[in-house]
Length: 260
View 1 (cartoon, helix red, strand yellow):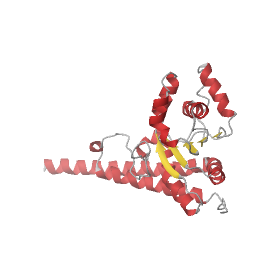
View 2 (cartoon, rainbow, N blue to C red; view 1 turned 30 degrees about the vertical axis):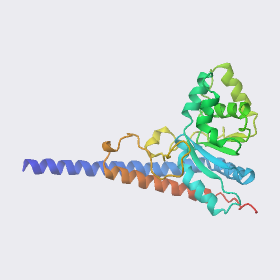
View 3 (cartoon, rainbow, N blue to C red; view 1 turned 90 degrees about the horizontal axis):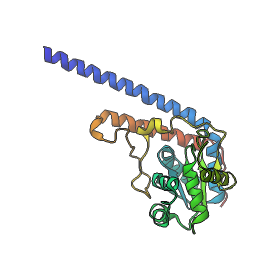
View 4 (cartoon, rainbow, N blue to C red; view 1 turned 135 degrees about the horizontal axis):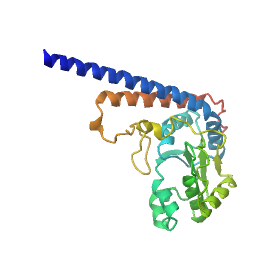
C-alpha cells in the first residue's frame, strides 16, 4: 500500500509538472505574438532590403535571432525570388572577444570564422543590439579586411545604451556604425523578451559554424538526461508554433513580390 501511495504521489507530481510546463510554453507563444508585433517595422525593413540588395547570404547571429532562420527561408521561397539567398547561422562570440581584446582580431581568426563569406554580399541579422560589440566587430572587419566591404548588419531592436562608459575606441566604432548606411539598427524598438537569453532553451541550433537550416532546438540544460522526453516534445512543439507565428507575421507585412 505504501509503495502504491508513493507511486501515485510521483504520478501526480509529474502531471503537475507537465501542467506547469504547458502553461510556461503557452506564455512563451503569447510573448512571441507580442514581440513580433513590436518588431514588425524592423522585419519589414529587413525584407525590403533583402529584395532591394539581393544578398548572397543571410546570417542569423548568436541565439536570439536564429528562430527567424527557417521561417525567413520559407517566406523568401514563397516570394519566388530571382536570386534566393543562402540562410546560415553563426555564433560571433569568438570574434567579439577578440575585438574586445583588440590584438586578437587577426587575419587567421577572421578567416576561420567568416572567411567563407569573403567577396559575398552578406546580411547579418541580430535580434537586438546592447553594448554594440558584435556590430562593431563586423564594422571593423568590413572596413579593414579585403573582400568584406559588402557586409550589412540589421538589429531588430535595441536593449539600451549599455555601451556608455566604454573605451574611446569602442565609442569611435559606434559612431562609425551610425554613419554607415549598411548598418541598420532599430534604436526605436525596445528589446524583446522572447528572442533573448531568457528563453535560451527554445533557441534553434545550427549544425556548425556555417550551419544549415536545422529544426532541432538547444536546451537550457545542455544535457538531455536532465529532461524527460515529454519536456522535449513540449519544447519542440512550442518552437514549431513560434516559427509558424514568425512566418505568419512575415506573410502579413504586405510586401509585394519583387519583379523579375
